[in-house]
Amino acid sequence: MDYKLEICANSVLSCVEAQKGGAYRVELCAGIPEGGTTPSYGDIAMARELLNKTKLNVIIRPRGGDFLYSELEHQIMLKDIEICRKLGVDGVVIGCLTPEGDVDMRRCQELVEAAGEMDVTFHRAFDMCRDPFKAMEDIISLGCKIILTSGQQPKAEQGISLLKQLIKRANERIVIMPGSGVNAQNIAKIAQETGATQLHLSARQSIESQMIYRNPNLKMGGTNVVINEYEQNITSAEKVKNTLNILNS
Image (cartoon, rainbow, N blue to C red; front, top):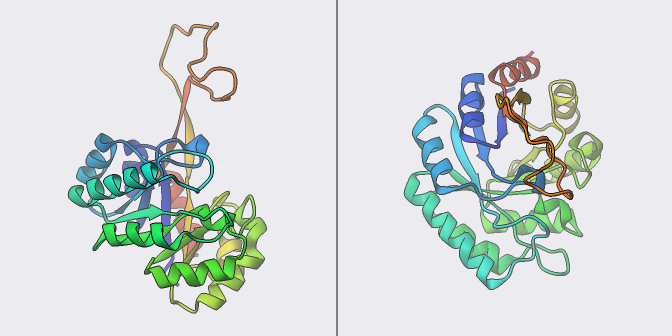
């Protein structure tokens, strides 16, 4: 089986580590605690310069929260896709929903058309759809190549039943890529039980900050956002390599 790993990369450094580890593709995101938002121009440009073996996808999501977007937000997403095209990105990752929980066909069609020759993945907005089978058919009709999904559960391992059904119904018309909570311990089980050949994970490890002075009275994110500001979570090339070895064995 030809398994492919997509790494959810939270930085350019994570992209580089993913490539070292043998990842097939990265999805470059900012705002990971919010579920991923569009990275900066500088991040996209540097990732494009440094990735030559690993494909570069970029999430197009102007904010955290729901997937019901205003006209202004839609225009921002179109601009971000235009930037990705100019920078030579391989693919973009999109997803817009209607208030009723269906795929917003008009808005998604405009985003797909704006993507041109780039591949299009439909992200985990899919997991917020009221009818996953109707949503899958709608997404196929848009011309998207991949659906990233946890099987409408908090973690992909919990969504194995639906993931298996989706892959069977898709019948190779679109790639169903399990993601969320995928790791070296469960990836073989998820792949075997669902039939998935592309899987999405972060493979990160914590790196301690080198700051010596640390102000104990202040957090930049306020009290509502719980983040350890003196560590970075970076994708590990070793973790990627080990996970790939587990899959292929």
